[in-house]
Amino acid sequence: MEIPVAPMVDLYPSIEPFERGMLPVGDGHEIYWEVCGNPRGKPALVLHGGPGSGSSSTVRRYFDPEAYRIVVFDQRNAGRSTPHASERTIDLATNTTAHLLSDIEQLRRYLGVERWLVLGGSWGSTLALAYAEAHPERVTELVLNSIATTTAREIEWITRGVGAFFPEAWSRLLDGVPPSERSGNLIDDYHRLLMHADPAVQDKAARDWCDWEMAIVAVRSDHTPHPRYLDPAFRLGFARLVTHYWRHRGWLAEDQLLHGVGRLAGIPGVLIHGRLDIGGPLVTPWQLAQHWPGSELVIVDTAGHDARDPGMAESIAAATDRFRRQGC
Image (cartoon, rainbow, N blue to C red; front, side, top):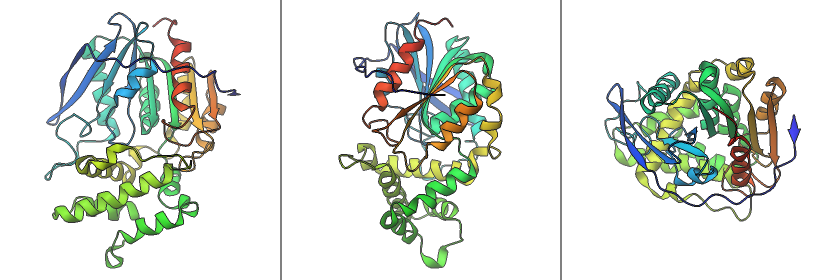
């Protein structure tokens, strides 16, 4: 059901991890992880977006550090995990949704967690839903924001349909692929350029792709681009992973997560979404909420897709506050 936005709350103070490390998960991958907050607190896992964005220190501030044991990690080939997707000879064959779900379970067992609250935004909400539907016995609650389920329909919209609202930016995205090299599938074309042997070709494709990503979240006049896009290694790794996942539709059957939402019965969920999220229209979380007993849809009228937009971070923190005293 739809409920009013929770009262605004301040984010919690910045904190540092009390534990961190690298976990070998197979296939030559090591994932970076960290834990902060209360070592004896309620376990909570944060899944970053992208795919390929890497984790942010800001997410630690969504939780009461006295109440939660907060686990954050960088997904395969992203952030501080190795190898990074920007490396010249990178092979992404062992980076799929199934691999990430396995990594989450390996991390859970390594840290000795029985069950945890799972928070995910954007692609992280897709991964959180996939994890909860695969392992409902391991999830106490779900807090999702800027929700996506990575269907072919959503991918077509975000790479083509939404161009109706951003025609100049979409024209520049299309022009980034030479006419003679266009296959009719823009995501495949960009992925090919991003994996090209010439670093100059890679860098231009990464810039063009990230310019598009920045354009479609700028729905407010006071929006500023995220500073991470200034880093060439971030741009290349991010663009490679996004196109890698989108060209395979996240290795998910169409509407798989919506059809599997019945497996979440008994798991409370808060779905937080900006009404101005043009790239990820509100219909996706609305449909999930209709089919998920125990879920609540929080609509932030002043926000788009970016968690930095007014009302988003405060609503996420309010949701974790709601669950902080509930048992594991």
